[in-house]
Amino acid sequence: MDPAGGRPLRYGFVGVGMMGVEHVRNVVALPGAEPVAAADPHVPSLEAAVAAAGGSLATYESTEAMVESEELDVVVVSTPNATHRAVLEPLWGRPVHLMVEKPLCTTVEDALAVRAAAADHPGVVWVGLEYRYMPPVARFIEQVHGGSVGRVVMLTIREHRYPVLTKVGDWNRFNRNTGGTLVEKCCHFFDLMRATLRARPVRVLASGGQDVNHLDERYRTEFGEAEVPDILDNAFVVVEFDSGARALLDLCMFAEGSRWEQELSATGDAGKVEANVPGFMEVVRGRRPELVLGGRGPDWPVEVTEVADDERIAEQGGHHGASYLEHVAFVEAIRSGSTPEVGVDDGVWSVAVGVAAHRSIEEGRPVWLDEVLPADALDTPDP
Image 1 (tube, rainbow, N blue to C red):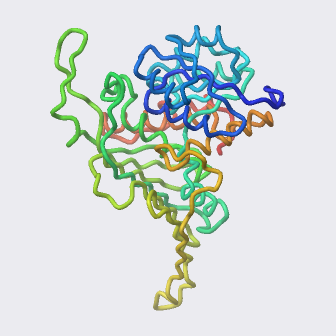
Image 2 (image 1 turned 180 degrees about the vertical axis):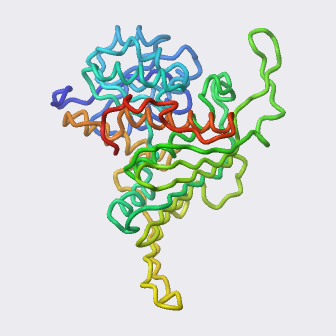
Image 3 (image 1 turned 120 degrees about the vertical axis):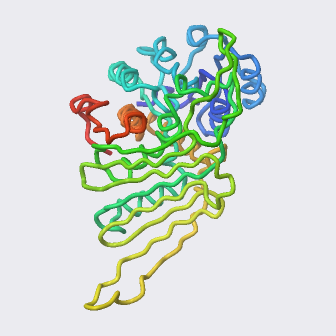
């Protein structure tokens, strides 16, 4: 059912820092959508949101004031990670559709509480794991699901990039606010693992540390003490799935000189598929030759396909158009009344794997997923 009766969907935004402003720009460019209001106690952020909206945007200090004053169809939540559960409280039960930025929450406990509330919510609840919508990543997943590699045995995701960006109040420098790098940043990659493999993670083994970034930074606490950031800047994380497949995340956040920011590969019993992001975005597919006695057989046939931007992208943003395409899919779900492509359960799983990875590093051992997320906590099928 179309909740807006064919008129443009009216959007409100809670939290309009860096990602919130990207969402505003997406909605400005999105057919059938209209940015109406924003709530944020930080005045410079509100000013940036108004500018992104073209100068017409009602502003409020609180979520409650915004939803009481405005007739909204959609609310996008982009506040600091640790606040999501509390920020959502005044929105539950209202006739609005919700997009909640990643990670869903910083703890499994909070994520499950949000899941319970979302089950009774009258609108669509979507989680902002937009990496699925990057054109080469989407093509990569399509190739794997289409059988190009056969039965997937190994999946690798490498992100070699720059350090985390500066955000309002430097909240993203501390694990207590972010959930830790493997929750805050890498929930994207744990989601991509599940989406690609269509299987359930069962065990995690991780090694990581903070070895280069932010070591010379000091931030004053409320008690006047100088506090050093504690977020990881590199890690290897191995995730084992109930399908028998294994996935590896190779993360480095002091690798600005890399050719690719993300590199993905899936290898199975019939071949291999690779995808690289950004710049020249490509998907590489190789098929296994027939093996012959005493030798390798014929040369491995390899196809390289450049992946052009999706023609639907009207706003590139900071994610190669992925967050815009996410809004396109979100609106389609709203208009049709269909199940969200990226729902709350996806958000819960991506947080749970990140929490398990941090625990593995802290305790120096493999961590089973049912240690952090009870086996009966989620009763929905895997993606």
